[in-house]
Image (cartoon, rainbow, N blue to C red):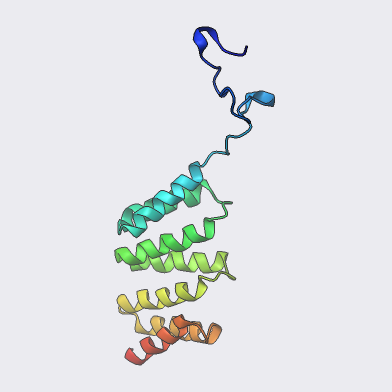
Length: 157
């Protein structure tokens, strides 16, 4: 049979399990590609959801640097900015939201990014800048819940 001395199977081969015979180059047919990037993104999201924003910011930064072509790169940029905003790091959040909006112009997350930029400027005391972002949001996305919130924010400035 195919058993190694001592009754052990060669690495990557599980007797009776389809797809575990090594294919060309020794690769096992049923093993999925590395999920390192997915694990990295999931860890960043877990940190964000658990309120560890500084850690999440670091994880998202690493993910962006190491996985620039990932299907999750859009969310990584957005949640990096969200982490910075939630941490109270408004200056960096403004920059990251801006970078996000430039890279992903058609994203469903542009309206919340514009709103958060306005809110970040408001938190920093830059009311004129905040008004600019709220008005831009209302002009570009008038029927969104974010535009509705921006109208309310404008009333308070």
